[in-house]
Image (cartoon, rainbow, N blue to C red):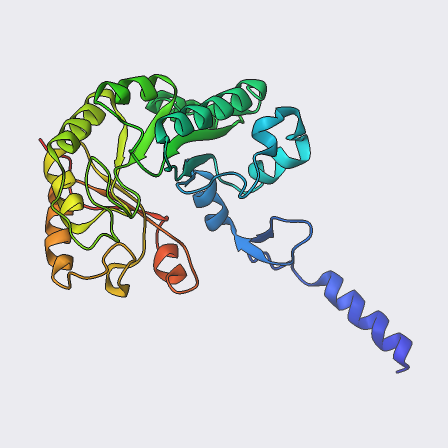
Length: 288
């Protein structure tokens, strides 16, 4: 048999053989990686959040010039498979109140300009609608609460679209102590009033970057589940647990009792643990 005859016979045999469907599919034209049909279905079913995403880092060009956000830019977010982005940024300085007002004004203007493709998430009903509407959801949040000068400010910023607020960002403010402070007395009386008002209006309470006692006090005071956005693995000494080696048990018990919610930061070190479920982990039940 000549080489040409061998190749013809091999091709004919391959054509006659039954097709083997391994149930794996390539999602991206430019990539060779394949995924099982079950994995694709599971990822496509839920509404997927990125709970720490400023859209862009180090530039406000899109916010200051909304038309500069092009269809190609939008497609990068749509193609990510993420349905809702939590736009969390840290503010501080001499005038946090004015800084947050400006930040929300920029974002509200940007979202209004792109209302046909972007949706501000203001309520659970908006979460139910965003995926079916084919839009990218934006949840407005702030990584500090220093802009709350009085409890009524919580209502004012909620009216402007803010739906999540960290209580502190590393350092101390009038509400409580941050994770890098040498001491931590927990929530102040003012902090208790702010937490209670956040509960009342439906603003998410985030205790990442808070000190130990401030964190535990928030669990105790809040009547709603408290958020930690994000948290590294507890057994790997997350940045907000710098000193108290006995916090793990206290934290776990109090957190579960408060019905808290943890959002894990995916990294090479914890990707395997995160991939066993979604990036969202829920512990405990809501308070009755």
